[in-house]
Image (cartoon, rainbow, N blue to C red; front, side, top):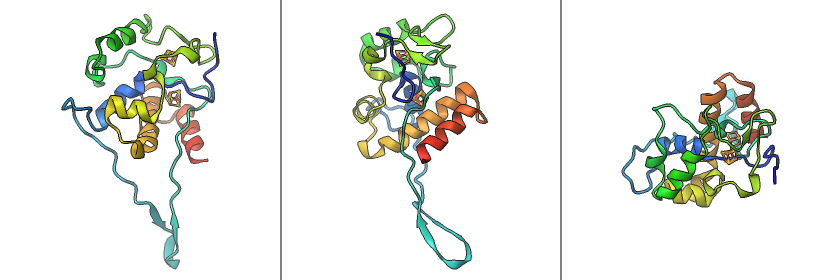
Length: 172
Ligand code: SF4
Ligand code: SF4
């Protein structure tokens, strides 16, 4: 059953919790904080040449696992604020180990041991973003990138190798 999450997806509710604080609410009246829209174009100096800015493309990166740290500090929304279904809250909480990381997360390999059977809220997908956070599918890519960046910063730091790797991956 164990399977590496690696370069595929290791998404969890941790960054989803982060998303909650920065995106449109799911009808729950929570704070709305949406990243500024990118300008889409940039000017390359005195020749007036404009080049369309490449939109980062979300992807999960191997060896990250930042979103599998499920216990968050009080500045993050709680599971009760994220989920409407009490069974989701219960499941989420039941996955938090004594060290705050998911009990299914292998810290040595930075992989998920139940990857194929991981909960829906562990999956970074447009429908999950839409249903949980009210994020329109057109905004999915940008929000997913932002959520991962926030989560990686929170876990590994703003100058971490993990963040650098992620930023390079989404711009490659
Ligand atoms: S924080 Fe993002 S890049 Fe890192 S493991 Fe989670 S989904 Fe993948
Ligand atoms: S089940 Fe745990 S280890 Fe697996 S993706 Fe979800 S949070 Fe990470």
